[in-house]
Image 1 (cartoon, one colour):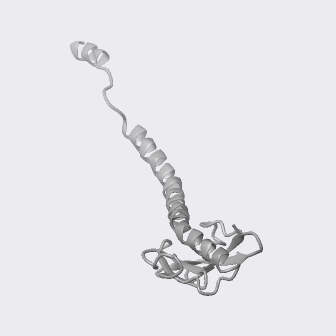
Image 2 (cartoon, one colour; image 1 turned 120 degrees about the horizontal axis):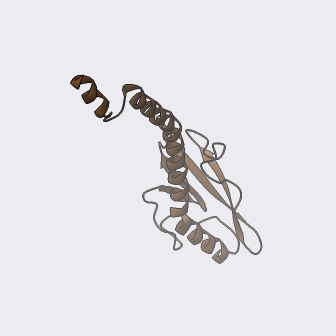
Image 3 (tube, helix red, strand yellow; image 1 turned 135 degrees about the vertical axis):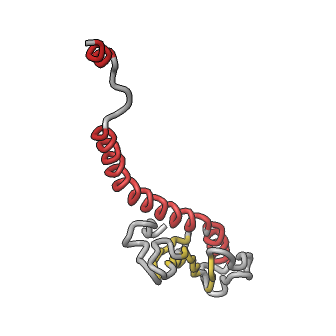
Length: 147
């Protein structure tokens, strides 16, 4: 009788195995969705920030073109007040800026973005294309509309 009274007084402490398994399953499902989304987010952020970093070169090339009367010839890295190509900017030739993003998608090849100036009478717009590796324009990592 005493043993039965003690059993009634004792209360459950902790979680059952099935409750713990349900929690682990929920965490696994959330991780399966969140990890790919996080990778895509960081890939997009890396690509966009790299393009933004090259803004100084775009400004310098635009000024060079305006100074040269709307002609991009001779607007090269290291001349005409255009900074020397370093880091992500791998080259500037006749105003065309080559930007290497690196292997941001993990396929073993570097992705490259080419910014080509399109001078008009009053301003310089830019055409952005992708070369090498994954097409960063088609993948949506970079907004490749003319700027």
